[in-house]
Image (cartoon, rainbow, N blue to C red; front, side, top):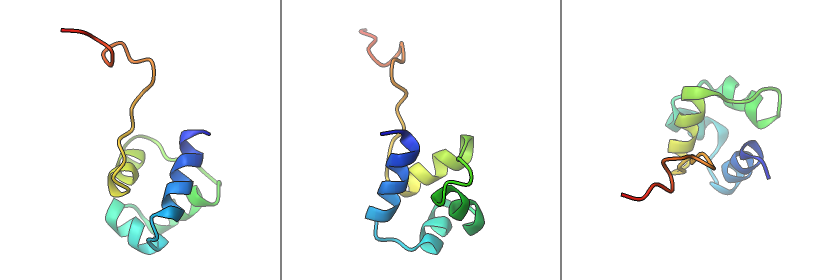
Length: 70
């Protein structure tokens, strides 16, 4: 499952309305609507804001710093 698919699934599972989630994520409702319907993807700050609103942490796989021992 892609990050986009997971986010869309989590948006539905959150039980929040699209308007409520857009407000919480500080995103225009239209941006969230286009993402939800697959018209566009979120990038950069918009992706970060949506993850924060859904209480998710976006972790990059294979990051060299992720498994670094000190």
